[in-house]
Image (cartoon, rainbow, N blue to C red; front, side):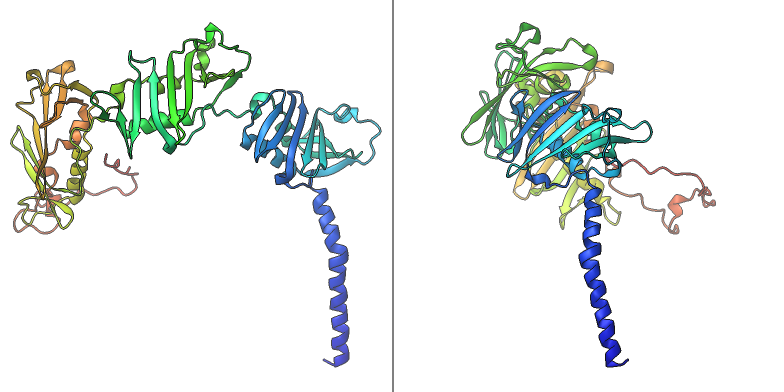
Length: 484
């Protein structure tokens, strides 16, 4: 190629690039902007005014959080407001229906059905007016920023802007972090309030003596309180609220001491609403003026007695310190598990293959053995039958005995009860049957049956040398349920 042709080609490429940059690119940008209902930075929105068939709302961002300023002052649901602004910012213009309409009434824009005004940082405003839904399709008529043109946008924008006060209110009843809670007091369930205190990393049930609390029960209570959301608001309940709410006095009171400054947060739990089918109850936070409606499941979650929070572990021990577990059974099928090379095996198993997972799980089940209730705080009684136990479980470590559990059954039929106690402890627990089944093991449960002498591999699966039963591979085979 000659030098002259190279110069001509370079000029053509440069001219084409200039055309694309100065002509086509702005046109594309204008087309993209025309496709957006509003061109705005969502994070720059500082105020929001909405008028719709569901009422008027004014919101303002204060210290990074949305607040309702009218028709009343209240916290806003951040996600709901953010989604509302996102719907406007992401809303598309499908097409322009009329550049200069003579009459806006056919479009439902005189007056508009819904008006949204956004105030941005710096004072600039953006406005969208929404009219009727189109007769066909999922679209709605709109105007923006006082422009005369009637636009067509998605009907989701129209319906999404129609919010009433309850839709945008923060429905959080109590706000706290679980790790910051230092004390919990539950009143109204027992004559003496139930008090739980955090001591280091553990929760203790106050009393004489103080007893260890079940951490899982405490976490469950805190989770129920933290996740509580209002299903409705009553702002004119009065102070104190009307007796119909059963909050003066409340049925149950829960008080939290939160943080190093020991801030107190309370929840007052009242009676049921007038609509039984909704299964709701009234609550108040910190005796504030607003009465909330919440799901009635809250009452069972907070109306707990002291015993409900007791740690009912029969024998607590560190599994890393245990080196052997001996189970003596009334039927004589006892066994001993030993830890060798950090794995649990059956003592005197010889060449038999041991189900290490089953053995390890038994040790975990012994450590996690919990009662469902407390039968006695004064030690075993003759009627418990613990002097002739079904099972005696001895846990030993390198330094000697760690502890012994005895499990017995008393009564027959519906009155049958399982009891468990650790030697040296005055507490006797009632066990649920399925919990006992986890530790009700025999030696054969841990050792795989060996094939008969001289039998070929797999002979144990064949009956008397006969051909194994043919398996129909076309039949759907359900997997076995996972072990408990």
